[in-house]
Structure formats: structure tokens, C-alpha cells
Image 1: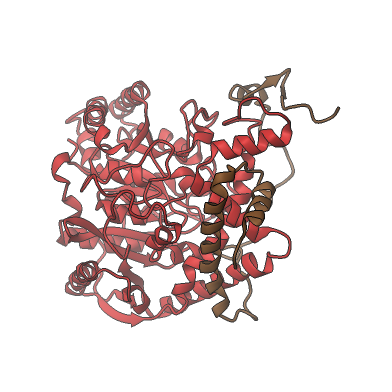
Image 2: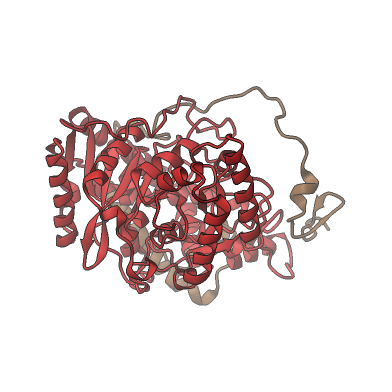
Length: 484
Length: 95
């Protein structure tokens, strides 16, 4: 059953070919058997999952089911889950049993979906390889010597290894698209504000956005139908109607104008990755799409601007972890300052501390204009580049990552090299646009992702463009040998 | 831009982070590299550019100042490190 997509499982459940309880049991058994190789889950909630599955079966029996009812999912451990540990990959929250549900979790519960467990991630979503997790690195099921990407590496690895039918992720600088690419699955980061951030532990609030990680674009559309929409508890959540994302999946894409930004096909891009992406674009031409060369001239400034904006916002957001109200507290604090400093010093890992310090420095007296304000201005330039491009094209395509998955340990000691692995995804977050990654082939036997970037609120079009490609290719069906 | 050990200690203090003395040179090295990379922002003129605080340039949504949550203090304090009579306990701050 684990080969099946969410769409296929949903049909099977409605037709009562199998029950959600059977399906959930099958996934739990796979997790037990195979996850020791991947470390993709931090917490598995076996009993709760089976109870949810039985409730889902009752809903299906009574005819009250919706398409996501009874589907076993993995939730990134950044979403608060009432009564279940929500660690955010950090020692700081190792003892944190969330006292409420995030809106995303609440909506999946209302839809009758099943939560198998919480997935591993880079600590507080700060990382591109899943190596900063307090719970140890996640391994890429295509080659367990390599990283799955990050920060949603656990979600990506567990979907690629078929240890969940689908998973949630969050994307601040590429944290859905980059691991989706490196693990050979489909992921979408919606427009900023599409999905509520309530109960999603904050990293950089002006960039953070939740999305989906699945086998197919159709599955992502089904999950996004549950997740997207206005929530008054998140003041940046968009108060606008959400379409049914499955309706336009099959629309003809003849005449679609695809922009290829020359800056994303420049030096640093692996030759085989480039070739693979070019082959994917050839497929689109066969489907009737037109290709237009475009330029996003300020692309090279996205990583520098991001590493001001994101650390600045993180230094502010993470000030809430003080050892007083919840989370880790140091032993025998001498005074209040000692309590703060040691709880934070011992509770956070080194990458998180590094980013808090960069942000603290950038926001400290006398530096605000030179760093944060300058970065916000560059953000405008990057956003304007996209605006101009979307006057000429419908979507933009590029490699999601410049290389395939790198080895565990390869970049962990060099923050800058690690940061550059998100070079193709960060600009999308700075502009707040929706972006996807779709499996497009292999290089050195490791998956390559095609990134598709759309204009604001055009998730439907992205999913349609991805789905049409998946109708004529089978890269999304490929599975790593030892997880078949 | 180069940060020395003293500067790293000052930033760590501002951020209320205890850092081991032996780790300070490493932080100084990495923070310097990050700030050097960030300096590339200086290569573009942004004199007449409006800073972008929100991707969609929308304003913060306002609501009426009415309580929307019930009191869940006891529920939230169940996961606190130290509480007494509904209060969070910290080391003495007033002699």
C-alpha cells in the first residue's frame, strides 16, 4: 500500500478496499522496520494514530468523509501538537509537550487525517542538511551517506522512503523545496500568508511559510486544500478566498510562457543537474509551452540579504526561550541573568547561537540602517525583478539546487558553503512568491529537482504545471531501492 | 568587517547566551565570514528604494481590543520548569 499516492489511497479508503486502521498499521510497521536507517521521525505516536484511524473509518462508514480523511501523514516537528512533544529539533524544547494545536494540525484533525508522528528537522529550521538537529542527522533514502537537505529533511526523507503518505514542511529560505529536490519528491511553498503560521514555531516571521511534501503535485493539491486559508489568529495570514487546488490540475498548458533566468543557470551549477533540468524543459516544450530567456539581475544579492533578515528576525523570535515559562532550564541558576544565559547557551545548538548573534549584531545600536534596512531595500529590488519577469512570463523554471545531495559532514563546519546550497530558493522567500520543486531525473543516481516559481497566489497554476509534467514522466514514481 | 573575541562576548551578552571561552575564537571566525558575505549588499545603490517589510505590502490587520482567549494559566503552567501558586519562579531579583 505504501507505493500508492494520497489520491489513490483516498479512493481506496472511500471504496472500502482497505481501512484507515489497516493503512496506518502498515505505515507504522514500515516506520518500525525502516526508520532506524533514516532517523526521519523524532516522535512516533502509534496509539494516537490508530485511534485517529478508527475515528476516520467511522467517518468514512457514515459517509461524512472528505478526501484527506484517513490518510496517514507525518507532521514536521515545528507544528505544535496538543499533548505531543514538539521539539523543533532542539534540546531547548526536548521536554516541551505543546499545550495546543497549530492551525495546520487542527485543520488536518478536522479533515480526519491521521498523524503518524513528528518529523526530524534542523534545529529551529536553521539548516540545509538536517545536521543541526539535536536528534541527529536524517539520512537520504537514495544514499544514506548523503544528506536529505533541510530544514524539512525528516519530512522529505520519510515521504521518499514511503514512511508516510505525505508530510508537512515549512520553508523560510528553501526548507521545503531544497529537501524535496534532494530526496526526489514534490513540494510546494505557497505564497507568503496562504497558510496560517499560528502554532508553527517562528524562525523568521516575514519569510516563514508552511507547505506540503508529497509524491505528486496532485497529492500536494489535496493537502493544500486542507491547510490553506484565512486564520484570524495569524495577523499575516491572507484574508482571501482559497480555490480548490485540484480543479485545474489537468488544464492544458499549451502556450504557457516559461521564463528561464540566466542567473540560475550560471557558474556553480553542476553540469549534469543543468542537463537534467534542460531535459525537463524540453518536455514542457513538447506539451506546447514556450520558453523565454529572462534575467533576475539582483539574484546574487539574495543570500547576503537573507542572512541579515532571517537572523535578525530569529534573534527577536528566539528571545522567548528564556528558561522561565517552558522548555529547557539550566541547573542551579545563580541569578536571573545566569538563568537566561545558561538556559539559552546550553539549550541551543551552535548554528542557532550563530544566527542569534548575527541577528543581534545586525540589530544592535548603530547598525540597523547598514544591515536590516539595507537588506529590506534589497528585498524590494529582488521582488521588483520578479515583478518585471512576470509581466513577460507565466512561470519561471530553474534548478531547485545547484548540485545533488552532498555527503553528511561535508559542509557542516563551513556555514557559508552550507548557506550557498539554498542559493536558488532564497529569492522566492524574500519576494514572498509561491515556489515548487518537482522530481526531474537523476544525476550520479541522486534525484534532481526542477523548481517552478509562480506569481503571487498562483499555487493552482504551479500545481497544474507540475501535474501535467508528471502525467508524461515517471520520475515522481521512482523509489529508492532499499525502500521499495 | 572583522569581529574580535571581545566583540563576540559583547554580542553574546546582548543575546543572553552563555558561550564557552574555548568556542569564542570559532564564533569570531564564522561571524566574521558571515558579515563579510553580507557586505556584498554594499555593491548595489539603494538610495531611492523603499524598504520592503512585507512581501505583499499589506498593513497589519487590526482587531477590536476584546479578550478572545480564556484563562488557561494552570494548563500552560503544567509544562513550566518551576511554578508556585500560579507564579513562575526565578532566582531572587530583589534583595
